[in-house]
Length: 357
Image (cartoon, rainbow, N blue to C red; front, side, top):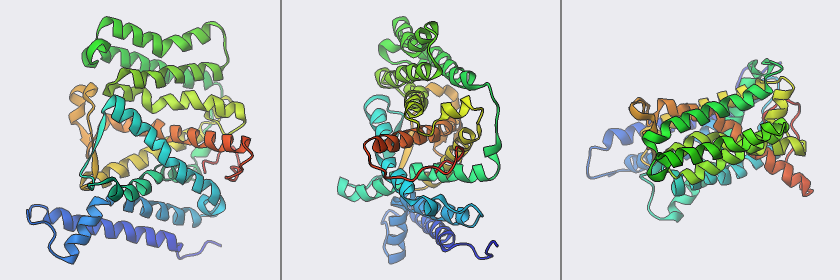
């Protein structure tokens, strides 16, 4: 029988988010005062404004844990705590990979208002970055339980693999002449980009390779181009490259795999992950906008669309959150599979072929 009172984690999570929003409002209302915080409330509000992302995501995880625990199936955090811990810990290096590509090669987003000194930032970094993957996965798990897991359509594996890759390649090559920096915007740069983005997959198709091999070839070309392009347009391939590259490895290792789902006609897990990514993206940008320590975007390849924004994020950029959740999920499964090959069983197995966490 379902209990009437929600779990404590739900109550604590909601109260934490509400308290953060209240204190953020206090800080925003006082920012015109050049003197800065002058009382206890002001200092507390300023601390929250600096650490808004980390604090709200702790509240978000607690809230979702409570909501899922309130259901008949229970919370995956409680049912499979080790898997949650692995997702939490590995979320940090996964996001560091995206930051590395961005700051060294793309310059598509920047951080502003961070506390001075790495030692003052590191705790906020770790908490905020660690919540990224679990936050999306818990939202995806909730979507599964709302019925998305029943989404099935056989015979689409090849179309779902090649279709998005072809669209991204065509759009990227079409935008290069106008927005490519340096040699990348010239004819030779466009031709070289086309060979890297499409060449490996076309070669595999000509040789009649399997879906897994073709996917890996697409991922290799996309991931390499994200680094070699050295411009914000590389975001087009950054947010899907690891899916194509890593998921075939998961399939070979017998780990949960998106490609195997598609081959079996199961689309629910993919759709749920995308929903989870979008839900978290909407929340991230909402909590980010008024915070002091925040991120901003530089996406000139969107042209006039860059000015149409959802808080700091250009609206079209929200599409990137859809594959981002899938990307983080396939990386998590690879890490768990590799650890198991090394005889380190650090995470529980998923209960069925539709579960996310």
